[in-house]
Image (tube, rainbow, N blue to C red; front, side, top):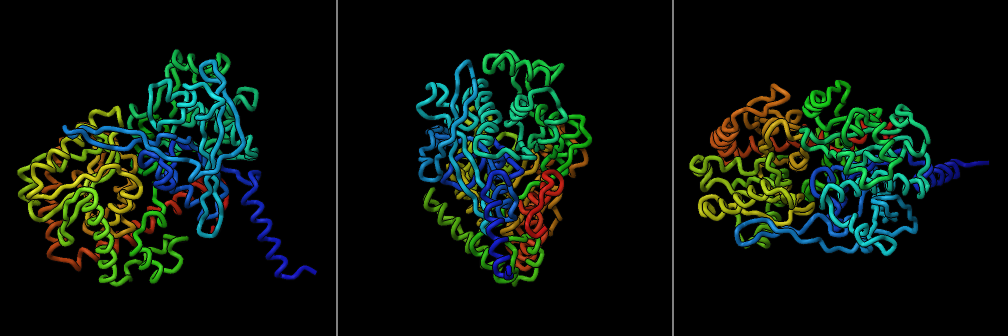
Length: 579
């Protein structure tokens, strides 16, 4: 006779088997970068952090997914500045063996008439209930390979176009071959996070042995993150011819007729059964860009357990049981006592001020409105918009605000480096009136401390170039107000004087590339002067009331638990615990 106890034991055994057996993993998630934690420096910015957060939430929800990316031996880079304030870069020195497990499996592919061998390292994400999500990091830096091929997994977003093309072949073609070798033979959905993994479709075509677009499309979904045409990888066929075999090139030309090269985004869109943008506004922009009205959207989110501060975590656990597995319950944050919210926030602010003192030797004031701006230093993000009119800024903010900046510019982005140079120059000129610090080497740990510890989060992208943005979501779950241009996710999260404040005109058009940028700058100064600074100093009750609603409205929704549930329902066709 089988007792209820034996039935439970049997059920647990079957579940453990299914959680560890590759045959029961129907979803593979491929991304050029995945940011899991600071000590695994295989990410540069929001794309990689989002990928890591999605996989963490998949683990929390028990979703049977496997992650795949490249192992970057020299990371993104360590940031420094020369005497002129110009960014310099040095390799990140880290030892994968300290964080990852090297697997015995090896596969190979032919690049530039050489056989390139690929091996894999494994990291296992454990969810809140113990569900594992394996993440595999592909590596070519070992003795079997030609010296040039060993370098293919050294740098994230480094090298020339041939280097980038080879990397994307390793990810797409080598990645699929590695998954098969590891036993993942029953994958029903390959999720390409941006176009970098697009050559996966070429390998699927080779696997099936005949040309059938629909059969490939049944297996693939694609997420686009780039709202401007120039941001999409494109490789001319004459360049591709130098890297892959004539047979593979012939297949690519057949897959992309009437083209003179490979658009990785077109490859992803053309061969996917489901395509999504990463915010409602981004979907509108993408539909117009690609003439594809069927592009859906799943607005990005953040992993609550990773980005919430220790103090807020304790408050949530005390007042909202089960919030970490079901962040939707954070709508109850309005019931948390105001004094407790403020105390938890001030503790986070103290930690940030300690970091500022440690790194810059500058003493910030706990009682002064602290504004943060930390993200990739791309020119379109306009980190220097705040300094458009220095006279006006000093009139509004002298003695009333202090500023924290952080961010890395791509090594070949001189425009981004010029923005950082200007930030450093301005900080030296006006520091006596408005304290300004720049925290070097922006990473996950610093990102968490800044988004938890500032009072106000500034976001000033040139619209419509912010596909989504996630740093403001990290602030929201910590009760930090957003002050942002209406683009990306903020259009959905914005409630004026409730969750934060807008900057500039309403987003009434898909493309707003010819509008007067002074409209944004003037609105920024006006709202700082008339709304934000007076509320912070003269109406603490209103400020904390807004903090509560920011958590309740935006923290409860803009999280990757919700994102993963949407992918399961709309794209993966798999279930998750608690569905």
